[in-house]
Structure formats: C-alpha cells, structure tokens
Length: 469
Image 1 (cartoon, rainbow, N blue to C red):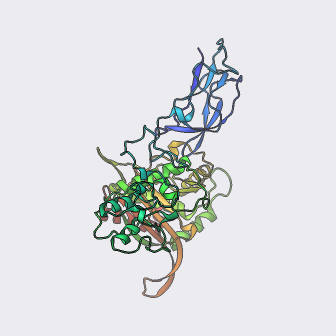
Image 2: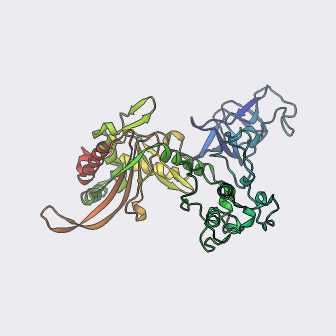
Image 3: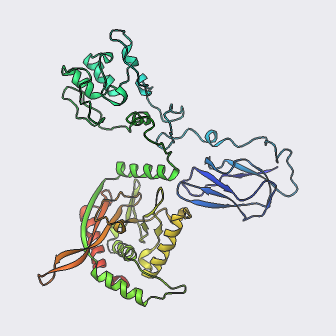
C-alpha cells in the first residue's frame, strides 16, 4: 500500500505551515535522509528529510501552498515493489484536502481577513450580527417618515443604539462621518437640539469621543474594531490592503496576550559605559583575528553576559510564572531580539552565565545571521529565561519593552551617549551613559527584586572585569 508523506510538526506549537518548495519531483527515487521539501512556519524556513526510501508517486500539495495543516498528506511514496494505479499523472483515491478545507475554521484572532466577510460558522460563538454589522454603501438617506429609513441609513452601531434610546429618527440626520455615515457625535448634537449633521464637519472621524453624561456607560472591555469599520474610515482606493503573514499574526497575538495578561511595571536607571568601552577595546586588540577562536566583541555581548550573571546573583528573578507554581531556572538563558524584515526573532543564548564573552559574541553573530535568513530551528528561539531588546544602534535613548512570555523580565537598552556628570571629586566631567529599562512581570518580580536585579546588572557593566572572573 502506498505510503503517505505527511506535513510534519516542526515545533511543539506548530499547527500549520507553508509548503514553500519541493526539492524532489514525481517519479524520483529518494533515500531516507534526503531533503525533499522546504516548509515555512511563522518564524522560519526549515528543510524536511525523507523518513523512508522509495519513489515519489504523487505530489498532493503544490509548492507555494499556505496554511497546510500538520499531518495533512502532502505526497505519496511507493516503497520497493509497490505499485499504485493512477498514482502518477492521475488523481489519487483520497487526495489531500485543500489548505482551506483541511483546516478547521480559524480562530477570529488569527484568521486572515483581506476583505470584509462573514465569520465562519466554526469560529468562536458570537451574537447574531445586526443589520448594521455589514458595511452599508454610501447612499442618500431615504425621505423622513417612511418608517423603514433607519434600517437603510449608513450609521455606526453605537449611533443606532443611542438614537433608539433618545427617540431620534436616523433618516432625519445628515451624517458627519466618512461617506456621510452617522456617528455618535451626530446623535449627541441632535439630542442637544442642534441641527442634524452640524457636528464638526471638518473634524477627524473618531470613535474616541468623550461620552455625554446622558449616554449609558460603555462596557469596560472594548472589542477590536472590525475590518469593515476600519476600512470605512478611509476613502476607497486611498490605501493598499496587505494581508498579514504568519509571523506578524503570531507577534500580534503574543504581544496582545502579554499586555492583556501580564501585569507589567518598569524600572529605569543610567549605566556608565566608559570602563566597559576601554575593556572592549583592549580585548579586541588582543583577540585572535583568524581561526576558530577569532572574535570581536560588541557592547551587546557585554550586556548579554552582565544580564546572565545578574540573574545568577539574584536567582529569585530568574523565574517564570505558571498556574501550577513558580519555575525557578538554574541557568540564565538570554534571548536577544533580532529585527528582520516583517518582524523579529529572539534567538536564545543558552547557559550564558557559563560562556566567555568570545563564545557569546560568535554564537550571537551566527544566530543573528541565520535569524535574518529565517533559518533558525524552533529550539533556538523558544524558551529562555529573560530577553534583551537593544535599540541603541538606532539612536533611541530609552523605551519600554513588552515582556515575551514565559519570561518574567525584558531589558530595554538605549544608546550610549556623552553626558555631563558629577565625578567622584565633585567636578563636572563627560561620561558615556546608557539608559536601561527593565520590564517586570509583577506576578514573579516585585519592585525591590527588580531593582536588585537591575542594580546587579549596572555594577557588572560599570566594572566589567567582574565578568571575566
């Protein structure tokens, strides 16, 4: 019986991927271990090796197909001595479903919606949409008094609700929103006795208008604005709709989850870099320039090492939150944000507290280079106990970074810049200062604990010899 080659799961969390490229053809004999295809996940492009030896009888999923579910048959393999009528050049008995049909209806938070459309039936349950939920084409309002004009007038759902509560006929109003759409301020103006449609004709359309005292209180949780409502704010043809790729969707999903579920707080301090810069220069001058032990240190390499050693000095901060208990990590696995086109990776330097600065430097260079090519394996960017985000090379002085769960901290590093400071003798002198901000998960790291970690990091950076011991 022919063997099915299935879409592999390239990481524990992978549910679907893009079959980017076939490296074999129908009728080709392959051996175990041969690379047969390239699969794109949300983060990387990875090679898939054949498990068995045989002949590729049929390719079921063409290259370039997106959203192929894990364990979906993608090809048919004939073992030695097997035959399959119609396996080559004809449809197989049970062809793999198309990516759209193979996958259950995607969750609304991750489903691509390039154009407004109805929510799939299998999506999360939601109340039946009102007639106003579908985008209404711009049209002249029907004459007042028809009795059915309100259902055909372009108006926002909030405006419809407020009009109903105030007993205002929508058909009698001229909307001040995009394309004549009736919005909240039009209802408020009419309720105060103003002329219909007189509300700030030149004002920018916005739903963030202060609520009038007479309006009922809104719910504290605000749902994301639907695609059709966002698009209605802009003139047709004035924008290009670029569908989200898998990486951007995952980033949006994880960061939204982080800010929604992780109680962030922030600690900032300035670090003096002069001793570190002098040490870096001396080490680089003496470092091997060629061969397997060659390296050239960057300031970021010292930051990684200092953060790793700081977590060892303050082990209570080297932890992750879980509902079952606190995960106290023995090693400092430091993730470092690497910007790539369309998103970012956070490759992890494992056991960074045990590695030399030269080892950290070479490993980071290799990880960053492969990250930009999307050639990292999942284990190289998953996990970790903390993260570093350095925007100093872009001239950013300071910023607050979003925690990357399950980490409990992330260090945001700004640019080193010359500033006047008061020296030990009381004299004004010029020093190279770097601003750093530690974002903390308050469930794991309290204020005093976060301050202890940040000060341990500061002491190591300002006295870099301690990193070499």
